[in-house]
Length: 191
Image (cartoon, rainbow, N blue to C red; front, side):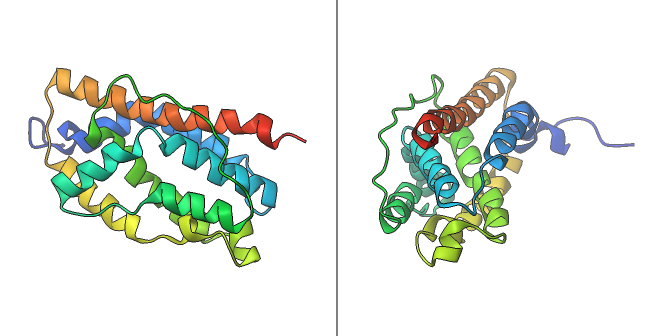
């Protein structure tokens, strides 16, 4: 029989965020999985949506990683802009509002956690790999170290109810930033 009480894994901030964001996470993964990353058009949309999604939240994650984890978070927006430039595409100007609730630990959970998905995608064929350019974001491995450090940090935090709700709201809203960015890129990619 599993242990109950404050020492069980289901009371950690990591467990709370996984539960709270499961629907948002799965929905966003499903939407991104519809993009054909082997086509230039699909790959540009993927990069553009990630850049737009990060615009309002990346700074919070970067500051959190430095202050709480003692690590420098790779400048993913710069990598994305660089990849788009290598592909001859100017970054699209999409304004995605910041989450209404800002909890840097929760925002970092989403951004650092996304590196797991990107690492999996990078093992498959994608346009940047086949073109031999524009693959910096997909090829980045340093972000995985942030995820490992952050998930260990999250396992040591046992939030109270109010704090847990704020963290969940912030993480869900961060997923929503990326969903809005992806939706906003659709008209620009329609042909």
